[in-house]
Image (cartoon, rainbow over all chains, first blue to last red; front, side, top):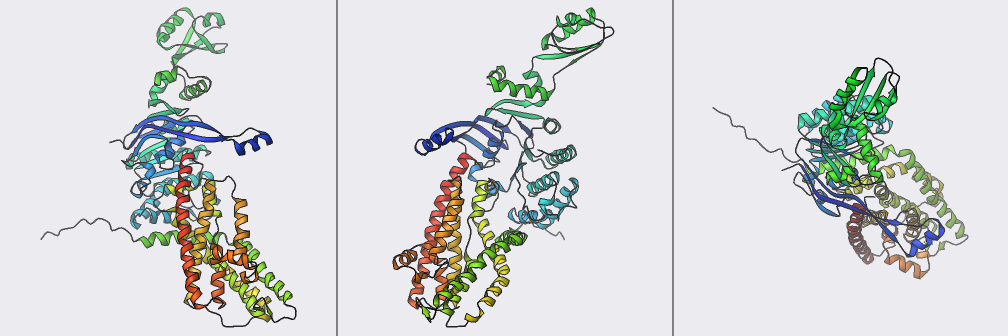
Length: 336
Length: 277
């Protein structure tokens, strides 16, 4: 049985629309126009115990909505979900004691008290034995290098320090499923890295299942073997990160270095010129033609060095999102 | 000889530990807000002193005004301020949690938000009452020439009515606070509640001094059972037979507001989880 299962999970938000201006305000008193927004559109995902899966997508794509449904905060409009065998929105304590949700943009700790006070409360709420609690706090705070900050008021901590405390709070009760919604947002590179290492270690050592959303490709690259890309409420990709590039791009880059200057026209007959300097150039060519074109270039041009590369994952993802904003494209049809 | 070790499932910690932890955290949180609390208490202390002074001026040469002696009237307002500190709950925190979406976090925790907030209210009442002591002393000092111990009642009926008032006031706040599920802006509603609710609870003037119709209406509504009723028990102005009726009214209103609170929670939460505020 998978740890997390979503079947046709759908969420429709209804928002009231109002025309601008005074007239619109008066009108809205009598006639309300409702607009339906499809935030999650038949999401199908299955995550096995111990997996660490990245949810990617532009803002408003439906990532947070999906996580909220899986944590029982939102009731789906239709569809089914099971987390550890429970229906999340029934909010059963047995279930709640086994999962955790961290929202990078929301503070779960008591703002005016030292973080340790929040930990102590959670210890009781989640019925964590004293010895286990002490050991756990010691280990986690040491790993995150915040062991000296436990008696500082949360509001006096830096964003990075606070986020680390949030993580400790969320993992105190050894949840079997953890949802991390942008845990590294706004943090400096050092904190991001530390948090990444911490998540990876927790996932490995405890076998907890993680779903992570992030805007930082570094997070995803470092942590997630598998990524699920959500856009306009739909899953448009669900596979290994390494397969993302091959599935969404049909081109390769050829980077060339020449021994003597070469005319533009001599290069552009091979493919689309994307970069040009006196003694170097980059050409985009269809993936399947890459070996042939490269061989031909080597034969016909004064090439001293040639490199065939895939486009960067980050560029690919940005490309997918940009394309999606204009019209449904090949990518979607492929996924369907 | 082989010693057998029996693997025992770890015993579940007693419930009171959770309660104590929740209560303790809120107690500390309340202390963190002491500076703000003192400002709030100051605003409450001003009417505790000025309203009796105003009435005392109205007495002129009379010994009794609307059935109140000077001593009784001063005692009325002093007792009112003590009861307000101990019993009167506020709907703001609940409304904020809903509006800011902080409720989402509480919804994922294995502890009821209702009781979590209840504990928060109790601890804040305690801290506030403690901070009120010096201000109460100040009020006593200003009004000292009109202080006398008359036939006041601080027996069990007073304390029971005060405890029920506390629960009732919390229930009212719980219902009011949940209006944030349905309204974009709750400030106006709360202001209205403070004005009307305070007036009908006898915070401005004893209900006996109001026109008969208004005081009759006030006796039907729950607000007078939050403050006016315990204060009048203290003053010895509630006949023995009426005490039981008053306590019954309190219980009834607790039941009604509890039901209303349940309905609001169910409908409101459905809305909250549908819209994901």
